[in-house]
Image 1: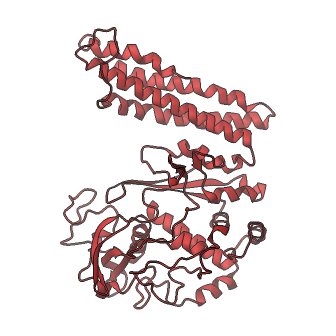
Image 2: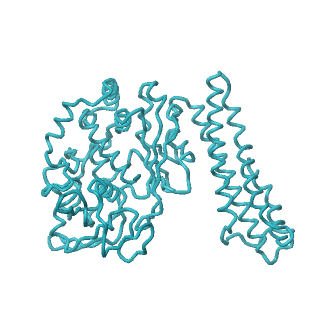
Image 3: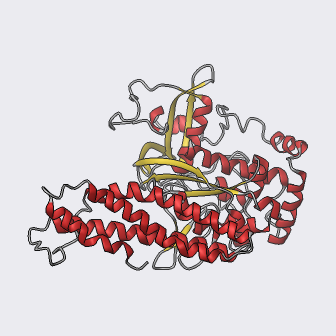
Amino acid sequence: MPPAAVGLWRVLTLLAARVTELDKDDLSAGEFLERRSKVLERRQFAPDDIEKYFGRYPGRFDLFDRERPWLQDPRLATECSATSGLNRIVFGRSSGNNQVWLGHHTDLAPRPVPAAEGAWHLLATLYYGPSGRCTTRTVKGRSEGNTAAGPLRSGLSCHPVGKNLFESLIAGIPVPDDGDEYRDNAEDEAPWEADGLGDPLRGPAPLRGMARVLAGRFQHAVLLTPDPSGKQVVDATMTWAWRTKGNEGLDPYLIYQTNKKGEPYPRQASATRATWRDLDALLLDSDEQHHRPAVLSAVQYLPPETVQHMRVRVFGFDQDGQTRDRQFFTQTTPPVLRWLQERDPAFAYGVGRVRDAAERVGRNLTQALKAAWALQADPADDGMHAPSRLDGGPGPWVAAADGRYWPAAERVFWDVLRRAEQATEADGDPLAVFQEAPARFVQEAERAYDDIADQVDARTHGRMTRALARYRGRLRSGI
């Protein structure tokens, strides 16, 4: 499932960096890129390097190891007076006093999950777990029962995808961050690499390097309980990991936006927003409004034959900051990284203009239908003046029109990009193709608008018909 896949991609990327020595914090950006090119030329991981790495950590990748279960804290068995219940960490199940929804699961009789699926839910909890109330944990006489949210909660994680897993992982390794130099030369260790478990009351060690970024910002502590055979997970404990927050920094796979204070914050995932509507934020270099995922900036230095077929896999989880999980999703784009701004600036800016035109028309559609609904509901409507107020609800027409417009707009978007690329290959001007896009989006908006109007019987709902007719022209505003 997508939230587990995001965690697995990060863990595998860190392991790939370890066995190829692309994780060395003394590498400059130029040295990193040179070494990465040599690694890609081998087209596979060196078996001896893999054996050497895992040989240093026997038992650390055992999900149910007694002393150091993978990515878990065995101290919870004694520091928590009760478990949290298996349903607490299995995504999609209700727990506590919540109503049964997607499946008939109750805490009175939790259904065990296979150990492999337990590992998925462990990863999903560590990266996307909720904030707020959790199982009480007592450490050195201090009892607390609340936690901060997981580091990726509500985020939109974007990963370059090549022809195979090897190419994808190598392309996804972040360039070393020189901004970590102030961290007192602390050892860069993943949780399974550390000799001991950290002090929960002091907070995580100020790690530097890739381990901090990829697997060093968890806010939850989890312990899975296996059945006697070790083949299933039958119970789980989830609680707080630290009392002080640490290991801050920007995640290299997230799109960041900038608030009014100039501070970056992750773009929120939305189940109602398709990936193509964020494509220009992946292709265009960072500006005052957004910051491209840092890992994609390094893709420009890959060999052209590699970049030519590279796609982007996007994982999203539509959640609030606390406990509400709405929907997780994933989508893989066509090969779009060949259009990065640094490689094809004219095309990348064209993508941005086309996407912006689709958004403007979509806003016009929403505003026109909202105004029409307000007008037909206004008792003072005389057919001549605007509605007295527009601060009410959007009415039923907006959602219905969105369901028609946005899928059609996506088809137009990819068709425009395909035709623009064909024009480029034929030594033509893609700009002319890009300039056609606004009119095509308006046509789709008008179709959606007219579908709504056709469902209104003018004989019995004259006010609705008149209101819809009045605002149809707004679809072309600013286009």
